[in-house]
Image 1 (cartoon, one colour):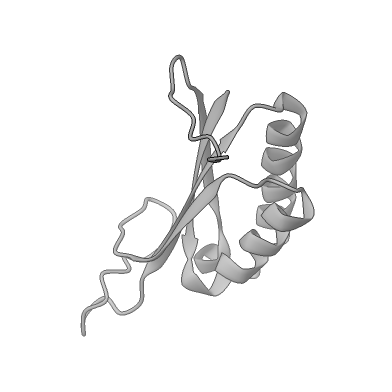
Image 2 (cartoon, helix red, strand yellow):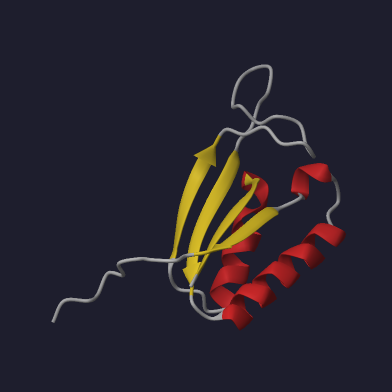
Length: 105
């Protein structure tokens, strides 16, 4: 099982969610307004000095092929980004233990 963290300008969130849905990744959470600083873009602190904010997506996925495809697709998106503000950061790491929620009967 992998845990994937994606952070992006709120303007890129719809494209990311569309990609996740197209890839049939079903276990994810979205935090729409996240203040952030990064090394590749201006800060987004939702203040008068640093307006705007990021969004974050957290994904849990057991299919390694889907994880690789998602990472590859986001890398391609970044290669065609209009500017640094459109860059999407994505990180993945192994989940060594978890308790998965199960549907009730």
